[in-house]
Each structure stands twice: as C-alpha cells, then as structure tokens.
Image (cartoon, rainbow, N blue to C red; front, side):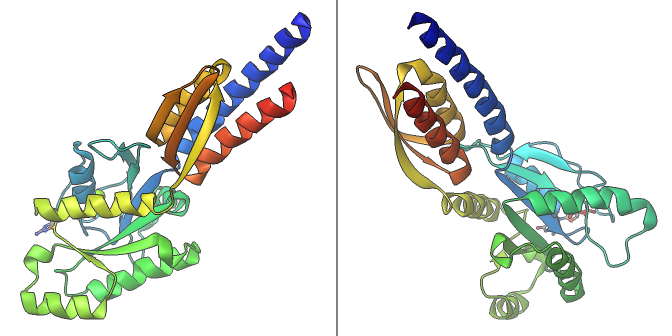
Length: 255
Ligand SMILES: Nc1nc2c(ncn2[C@@H]2O[C@H](COP(=O)(O)OP(=O)(O)OP(=O)(O)O)[C@@H](O)[C@H]2O)c(=O)[nH]1
Ligand SMILES: [Mg+2]
C-alpha cells in the first residue's frame, strides 16, 4: 500500500511538472498585438500601455522587430502587448523576414488593435492594406479593434465624419492620458469578456495548483478547509481547463 502511494505520488508530481510547463506556455497566449501601417503610433501606444522604453520615431519602419511587454500596472492574469513591424503596400525586400515574424505574432494574438493614423489624408488606403493582410491570415474580424490614433490632429468636423463612417471603432491620441486609460480598459475588457468563473476544491497535497490559479487567474474567494482549499476564480478557458483536468485525473487515480 505504501509503495503504491509512493508510486502514485511520483506520477502525480511528474504530471504536475508537465502541467506547470504547459501552463507556462499557455499563459504566454494572453496576448494583444498592435498592428497597422507604419508610423500609425503602435510603439507610442505600447510605450504608454506598458510604461517601458520602446523606440518611437517619426520615420517609416522605426520598429524592425517584435517587442513583447506586459501591460503595466500588471493585470492578473498578465496581458502581454506585442509591438510589430508596420504594414506597407509594397514591402521592401530586406524587410520581408522581420515582417514574417509580425504576421506570426498577429496570427497568434488573442486580440489585435489595428492602429490607424487618422491625421494622414491617405489613411483609407492604409487601412485597406492592413485589412487585406489580416484577411489573408484568416484572423476573425471580431478579434480586431480598429483604433484611429492621432485624433489630436483631426478637426472636430473630420472626427465626426470618421465616427459616422466607422461605427464600433476606437478613437484616441497617445498624447492624451485619458485616451490611453480608455485604451487600456478596452484591452482588459476584451480579455475579461472571455473569462468565466469557476470554483475548485484543491486537496492540500496539490497546493501547487492553487499557486497556479493565483498566477493565471483572478482569485475571487479562497477558503482553507480541513482537507484542502476551496477557491473561486475568474479566468480564461485556457487557464481553467487544465486545472479542472488535473483535479479530475487525481480523483480518477485515487478513486
Ligand atoms: N500628434 C500625434 N502624434 C503621434 C501620436 N501617436 C504617435 N505619434 C507620433 O507618430 C510618430 C510615429 O510613432 P510610432 O509609435 O513610432 O509609430 P509606429 O506605428 O510604431 O511606426 P513603425 O514602427 O514605423 O511602424 C512619432 O513621431 C510619434 O510621436 C498621436 O496620438 N498624436
Ligand atoms: Mg514602431
């Protein structure tokens, strides 16, 4: 009997370790990608959202690689923001490689902010270029939020026309604190829409799962009972499902 318990414990530890690794990978998936035509203000928005030094310059292709940073102040679970290389109509050859990484990060993102320079008289054409590429990647439109940036340089009359023509779009300036706060709230809200509430009873022997829930979800309630912890969390399906599966596997083995 003792041998059997020792054996089970070893197996459980191995499973837990494997799950920890899988979850660590999965948690990287809470990603919002900033995409759009070059010079739209992607890096500026990233800098405002993540409170980090991100290279911003008034020149084409200021960004030539992918940058990933967590939303700051942090959320639970963390939301990662990816800055990407700007889209353009006829991509210069030497940029194809770095652009490929941009396409990948766009495809992998849970949610995309499509930034548009509203002050550029040519922005219609630029929207079209980005939209075509996102279409080719088969990114569902409901995952994309159009963000008209640089609204500080748009007259109220033009702003009204834009709002009329693009219902559901987001209008902002990275120079306006209130706008950045609204953008942050929109990103957080997009993730929270996909979160659901769940309650787990985690035996003390598996308390590592409680730590994982703290890392990947928002804990709403936690009670320590005789045999374990009863914990209610709000989390994304990809965070909740593996914990549920791990607990069921333990039940099956011990029962
Ligand atoms: N007036 C105004 N200028 C802005 C705004 N947001 C960004 N800019 C300016 O626009 C220029 C380009 O900004 P970036 O953030 O580097 O643009 P990007 O989309 O990352 O550009 P690439 O990396 O080249 O694709 C910079 O000079 C910014 O200061 C805004 O809301 N209003
Ligand atoms: Mg940039």
